[in-house]
Structures are given as structure tokens and as C-alpha cells.
Length: 311
Image 1 (cartoon, rainbow, N blue to C red):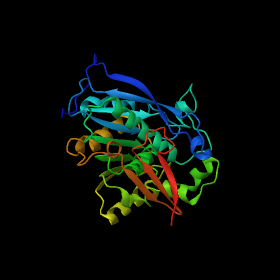
Image 2: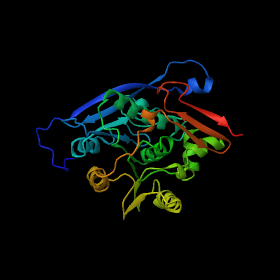
Image 3: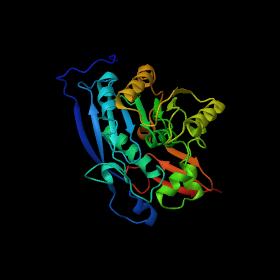
Image 4: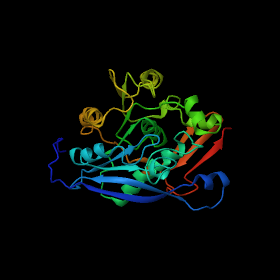
């Protein structure tokens, strides 16, 4: 794997958008056949794709858009030999405001459908690039993007060689529930609670958080998740950035990304086929029901997931 290197001024990065279909909220709730929802994702590719080229999913934050992590994606593509993809998840970014790419709409569902949007982007690029090394699949997310990256390690527990979550939301805060503009059932709150389902995480987790984060204080999120991962004996590493804010300037975040990802991406690979390739069924027990995900189903299928009542 090539080491990180400065990009020359005349370097032409392969960058483009892809569009795929994902499951529609209305279709699921009304149990009817409505058109699937279209999602746009941003992709960066290394100059040369070879047998070792892997895939890295980036999950952007709440009210941001698919270009939030562009600097990281452009760096990672060649430096770490990965095709990078970031989905414009529903109700946020350009999917919310086609002119500015900022903001979000309510009611909102605390990352649930947005996790499937991100999974869909990864599944789609893996299908388009069939020669990618599926033993090298990784995920990175900041803020609510970190929340979705962590939830993906639960929804698709045998898919990522590691997940890196920066300043992540790890549980459904009451304030965020209020901002969404609706009430949530016990099961909806449970499925968005990373700490509650941390026992289902199987891949190494890398956490980082600024100690001066006023948006998502590290003591209310990463510290609590760290404690739970330690109790469960899960592979994890945590870095606290003294005086770090929630969303640091680009160069600071890029350097933190290089420090964490660069130190680990060359030595970690999946031991088995990923959940998407294997078409595995994943069951996640919640408060009163169990979420059942069938990864053998297409991303836009109404059979992709269902809720089963506990016996």
C-alpha cells in the first residue's frame, strides 16, 4: 500500500457523482408500492485501481452534505488506495436545499433511514466496481455522521475492517428528539442508541472527540461509549483532543484523520465475506420489537428490513 504523499499541483483526482435507489419511508409506513427514493453520492477514486484497492464510506453530519468530507476523501483515495463514497442522505444537505446544500427538514428519524442511505451508497459502489477488494472496507464519520458510522457497525456487523467515529452522537438526546418535530416510540429510540447495542459491534472502533465540544460534549457521548466497549471487551481506541471543538478547521481534522486512519488502514482487513456479499440476515433486539435486516435484498426493496414483535 502506498504511503501518504503530497498531491502534485497538476494531479487530477477522479471525482464524480453516482445515483442509486433506496427504500422509501412512505412505502414502508404505508405498506404500498410507491417509487423508491433516489439518493446521490459523491465518489473519489485513486488514479490506479488494482487488486488491493478497497472502499471507504464517509458519512457526513446533520444539515451538511456529501461534500463535507471531500478533502479527506481526496487524500484517502490515493494515500490509502480506496474508492471513497459519501451519500447525500435524505432530509439533509442538498437533498433538503438544492441551492445551498445546508439544513435539514423535520420530522426527522434520528439516523435510522439515513443509515440505510449510507449503506446503499457503499453497496452501489461495490456493485459498480466489482473488482474492489472487499476485505478492505472502512467507514469514517463526524458528528451525526459518526453516529451513522457506528450504527452501520451494528446494522452490518461483519462488513467493516474498522469504523472511525469523530465527535459522534452515541444516543438519542431529548433535545434532538425535540428538533425532529415528532415523538418517538421506544423501539425507534432503542435502534438509534449505539451504547445500548454495542455488544453487536464486531469490528475495531476508533473514537476521537474534542474536550471543548459544546455541541456534543465528549463526556455525554464518547466517554460513555468508551466505558461500555471496555466492559464488553471490544477492540477500540480513543483519542481525546484537548481543547478541540465539535467541527475543527479542515487542516486540523485532516491531520487527525491521517493520524488515526493512516496508522491502522494498512494492517486491518476483514476475515470473512461482508454482510452485503454474503446476503446475511441481521437481527437487532430493541425495546418491544426486533429489527430484522435482510442484506440479500436490493437496496430499494420493501423487504430490506422489517420489525418483528418479540415473542
